[in-house]
Image (cartoon, rainbow, N blue to C red; front, side):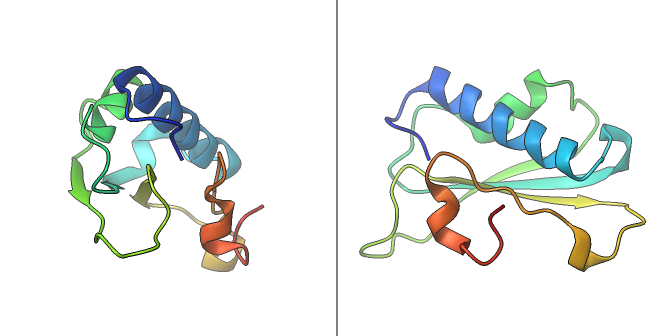
Length: 110
């Protein structure tokens, strides 16, 4: 979650989240097939995928989409869904929730 709709904070938060996802799951950029970023409708300052590009993901297809505008949903949230080739059972994948977003999936957050 971002504290405000700010391009610099977007870059920092997405970089942190994406780096944690790769690190915790021992995934290299070469294993990535594609990445989907979503953000809540209240975020307008930057594309979340731009932060991933700054991490060197130049040859990985990235796409951004907007989350549904559901009444009562958390605000200023960016989500990442990475498709990767891994030799790890799905049950061992570590899902990453940071900056207060842990409440979205307390059953998966570590």
